[in-house]
Image 1: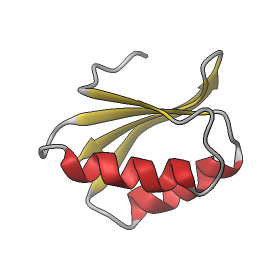
Image 2 (image 1 turned 135 degrees about the vertical axis):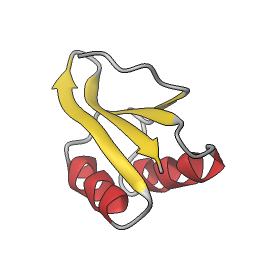
Image 3 (image 1 turned 90 degrees about the vertical axis):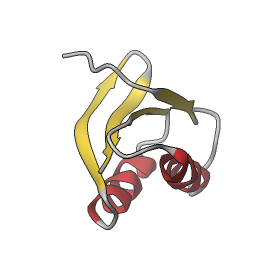
Length: 77
């Protein structure tokens, strides 16, 4: 399933914890209801981003691994 998103964040070249920090910074700039697509190449980032979403007013709509890498669709509540 493909989601419509408002902003895409490509952090495939960043080392942990930079992808999680940049994800939080980007989500903070979004309006409520907007969706962020995050793409990372680091498997270690998956748990960190899931924890970030669980502890903030965000909703993880989808998380998968595909040819792009590890992909998240996160909605700001």
